[in-house]
Image 1: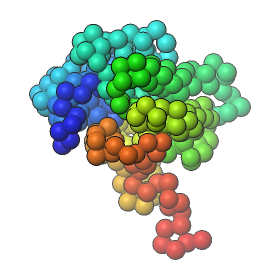
Image 2: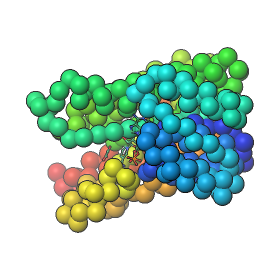
Image 3: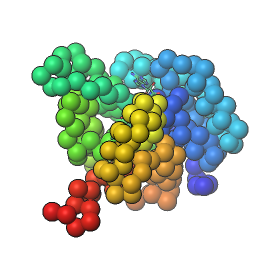
Image 4: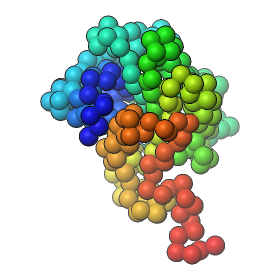
Length: 261
Ligand SMILES: NC(=O)C1=CN([C@@H]2O[C@H](COP(=O)(O)OP(=O)(O)OC[C@H]3O[C@@H](n4cnc5c(N)ncnc54)[C@H](O)[C@@H]3O)[C@@H](O)[C@H]2O)C=CC1
Ligand SMILES: CC(=O)C(C)=O
């Protein structure tokens, strides 16, 4: 646990499921005040908020589609109205769908970029504006993916959004460092969540994926969440502009395992 996270105000996008849910609950254990953003299921978001409260934190839920600028502004305003401030912004909401590049419409490309990259841009920009205006040494964390450095055929929009997120984060980290604002990415590998459950409960796909991971197993959302609380805490006070890969070694060329090559 990180005592300095107590009463810190954190906005987490896409927090009604998966990695976002696990992060909300972990911040709750640290006594934080969490704005649980959701896009469609208020019921799921309220369950997450209840767990945050049971864990010792405070929570409110807020519906917002991160592909809409005005809804992100309203989301951040909720933190200020309900909890009086903003200290930590976590851009987690994301989407993906396999489509071969030659069949992908511009609309399909743009939709993923709007959610995964432009949404994170607006969330980061608005958080930084607030931090600077109120002299808050806040922190921004983006949930990226191993596909910010591993190309992913049939997911050109997703890989482009996460690759873009890496350079966006590094650029912002330099712009905001003089104000004491830290910006970092967490890049998960294969994690069991709502959007991956179908593929990872299929034994054949699971076995194939495990072969791509030196640790030989897929990860759990909680293993990402504990990295987020660390990065947001004062224990990470000198870390900015970094990507932490939470991937069981997936980015370390697993095809060379056992001395092959
Ligand atoms: N599960 C995995 O293996 C990996 C996940 N990630 C990233 O982790 C993040 C979280 O994904 P997971 O927890 O795995 O999946 P998930 O499907 O459980 O969570 C994604 C969340 O984003 C929300 N969302 C989607 N579009 C939205 C929009 N327009 N506005 C607001 N919320 C929206 C969904 O409602 C959902 O709650 C994503 O950015 C994803 O790209 C990255 C690498 C691996
Ligand atoms: C969705 C994603 O980034 C992976 C690694 O599955």
